Amino acid sequence: MIPRAPAGSKELNRLLKEGEGLTLEFKRSTGELREGLQTVCAFLNGSGGMVLFGVRPDGKPEGQHATEQTLREIAQAMDRFEPPVNISVERIQTEAGRAVLVLRSEGTSDAIPFTFEGRPYERVGNTTRKMSQDRYEHLLFERSHSKRRWENQPAHGVSLKDIDREEVFRIVEIARSVGRLVGPVGKSLSDVLDRLGLRQNGQILQAAVVLFGKTFLPDYPQCELRMARFRGADKTEFLDQRQLRGPAFKLLEEAELFCQRHFPLPAKIVPGQMRRIETPLIPPDAMREIMVNALIHRDYAIAGGAVSLAIFDDRVEIWSAGVFPNGITPESLTRQHLSVQRNPIIADIFHRTGLIEKWGRGTNRVVDMCREAEIPAPTFEEITGAAVVTFRVNVAGPQQVTPQVTPQVTPQVTPQVTPQVAKVLQAAQRPQTREALQTAADIKDREHFRLSYLKRLLAAGWLEMTIPDKPQSRLQKYRLTVEGMKALKAKRE
Image 1 (cartoon, helix red, strand yellow):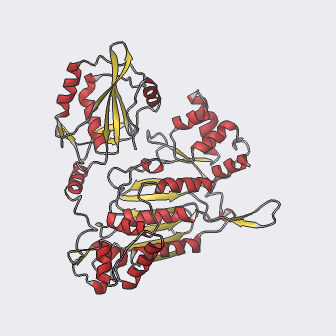
Image 2: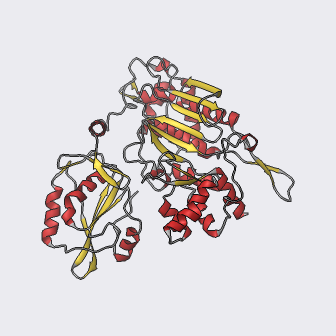
Image 3: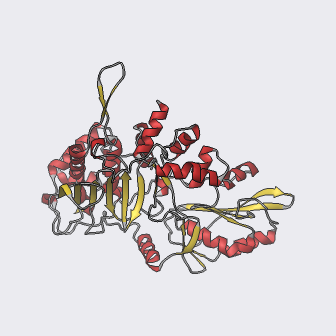
């Protein structure tokens, strides 16, 4: 969620310190109006953002003379957007007769995709670029079908006998018990499906098959869960694997059973109490939240897709077919963001059971739960057309970690957990840029921070790169590892 436009010079200076990024762009003056409006177009096609005219690339607010003629030129240029847009221009005074002009645009509009001068644009990191034709056509299709989704289409050839009556009434009782299904629902299966919005004009919807179907082949192969436990850190050797098709709530239960079977249950002795305290590898509610998200937000239009749960020695991955819904980026999921639902009918049924909320806080709660459990927060990525969530945890257990998996760290490179190191580790519980970590440590000299802190923490295995195969990538970030979490925990104790 982008911040509101700054109301004065203090808020402006605070905003400028963040620097250009996914939702913020600086332009020296409206002499760069065309380029600035291309970025506005990119923001409209993404998560929103602000373009500031009168700011140097280094973030210094020079301001510019903002005459009535300047505002008319901006208004005329706005006519080059398609569909039409209504973006106000805010003026923030800097010096006598000079001002910074702020153009703030919201994302996630039903009118996406937007074009400027006949071309669509998108934002990648802190860069605006022309959108590919394939991406543009995909967004056009989504816009024209926003009321015609896969889930709300009739399930041709499916009748009431193909719906699991027992499962339907089991979920209804759960919804009633948590107070999210009030009033009569009817006694017949058809009445209940109507009440839940799973039938329209007497026709069963495809969402009903996902939630309560009995048979999934040959027409609904995508209602599949794939689970595997691999030896080591790659997919070379299976220790266990399962593939099954079923209604969504049953798939969730199977995933939880698979995790229980393969997750160790670490324990520690509480000093002075002479008893063991067992703590889950991943907080169960956090794991359940991510699995539910995979089931309700995936793209069911991909017939060959599935939800996959992959357990390795050093991590747990949850894959779901389809990228994140339009307007949601992997970076936005660890901060405040809108709740954008690809399958609102399916999501509503899960909401009624108490498994999810509808306020876009699920992933934030997961991050908070992981922090409380003193494990690294999960990472969110889009990989080859799939949404991927990764928990970096030691599934194998300390007795099975080999030097090849976790390199030995010598005393010479093991950092001391100084207050500055602790601040870096604390900040890196969520993926952060080098600049953000340096700011967290309150270290002014960039090279000193790189050599004395960042490089040593990477060498010690306390931090890791989010893009390890491209160390110099401008999108590079750093996150806390399991070993780094242990060091931070030891410092706290």
